[in-house]
Amino acid sequence: MKKAVCILSGGMDSAVASYIAKKDGYEIVALHFNYGQRTEAKELEAFRAIAKSLDAKTYAIDLPFFKQIGASALVDESIAVPTDGIKPGIPITYVPFRNGIFLSIAAAIAEKEGAGAIYIGVVEEDSSGYPDCREDFIRKMQEAINAGTKPETIIGIKTPLIHLKKEDIVEVGAKLGVPLELTWSCYQDNERACGVCDSCRLRLKGFEKAGLEDKIPYRS
Image (cartoon, rainbow, N blue to C red; front, top):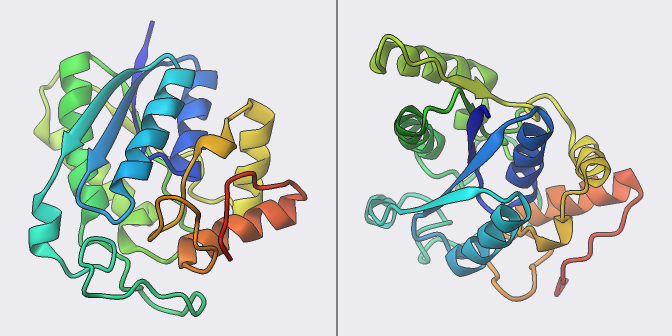
């Protein structure tokens, strides 16, 4: 059976992308990163639950150097997570080159596992505006992976959500039976989602526009 490495944060987008990979006929190798993010424990819990529902082989990789680099509110607790709405430009929650590093590690695991695809739930059309979620960036990472792996290795980066709106992602997830209630999107809370960070706002907007109930607990 063909294999796909799915970068699975435990969030809604990556969970839906992983279920799309399953629908596409791939055996799932689920890859998660603990990089010192504020909600690391909750995301790991969500990853394990979603990977189990996919009957996936799992890798959970620790990347502690992200906290040493800092420069993001997700890994530096001296920087406040914005809660006053999504603004133009690249937000302080952007983690420098995170997806580039994630995709590089995913490529190494895919080559080792003999996987033909990497699925990543990046969204360009309706997101926080991170530069490493753009289609042009993914295209160039694909070129780098092609150049930096064995001649017989063929790994395609799949981005099934990149041009979708959040409500579309919620609807696709519901149709595929993704356990969205097990996913976690909040940038700052591990018990009850804050409801006001960029990620919570995007998620709530998606559920509202899709006409579906978001079953995770919110404090605001």
